[in-house]
Length: 255
Image (tube, rainbow, N blue to C red; front, side, top):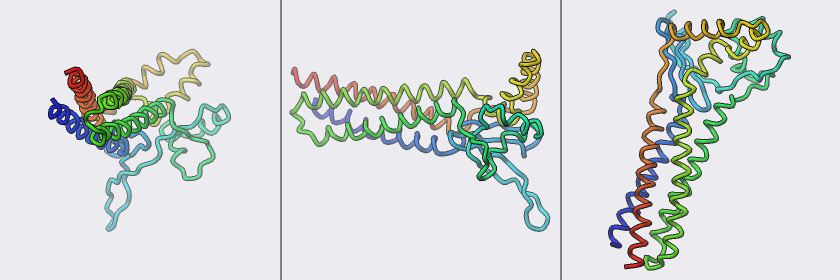
């Protein structure tokens, strides 16, 4: 039984490490969502937790144009009435690009949705790191100190459960807000709806914007979201392995 317990520990440690690696890679790269323009590649966008990237035509050598990926912080203008005059002077597709200007005075910030994404992924990283340390502690503790092993196992399971829930929340929130950045960045929908609300014409206007977006863009998950899904699956396997280890340790104690 002790050998089986070691197998559970070793497999759990490896699974937790791979889960953390996939999660960090997914978190760092702006490839959670892709808004691919159906006709104009220059309008394609890639969305991540911290950055959004756009395809842009830039002049190359010998009068040739190439598409380059340009990334900026995924921040938006605050809901500030003082900015209404400025916004009216700019095309809707260019309004949120004011946040891309270095040293801009507009106090741009991440959206509340993005802040939830960031918080959830950071909590997941912290709990996964602590879980890896907890699992490794089992290898350092005398194998016959059952009470200590049980206590550490319960703490590990709790941490892994939190990490699993945070990953799950991240993916659920991601799937339910697939179009958010497109509407806000390309169409400045929030500000325009507030303005239309005063004229009681929000429903028709919003429906029209959604139809335009659906005809112009193909919206789908990108590979960072795939890594996060893999991370969720691995975290569930890690959690199961540590639950099995806890049962195995308990049986060794009473056996």
